[in-house]
Length: 148
Image (cartoon, rainbow, N blue to C red):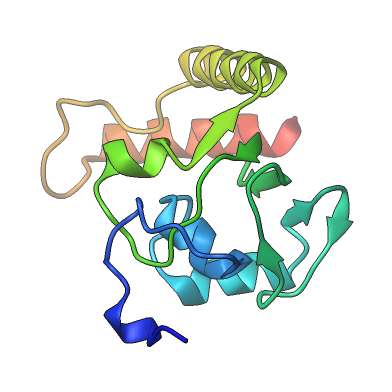
């Protein structure tokens, strides 16, 4: 049996099974393994339509649904990796469905339009301490948000 520490490093490393939290970290969905494990435990990750634990192994062909904030990714596992590599190599680990890409693009557009429509709380030219005029402007902004 091969010693796991002697395996070649990097996303191209093909092993028979990899923990889902390790794979999510290696595929760069999350910055750390502990954050990936929390997401799995918190029900933000579905493996083939089921909630799983962080130690559940993934294999090529598995379908993952990853919810990060307002965005949702539906990806199919292509390759396995135990270690984190470059972003370009991480993208080779999975294929995102077209429906997922379209839904994320629509959500990004909605967020952009909402951000453009929202009033600006403090003028961009304000530096340092707010003036009396800035405070009045901010109070009006708060009042508008409380009414909606």
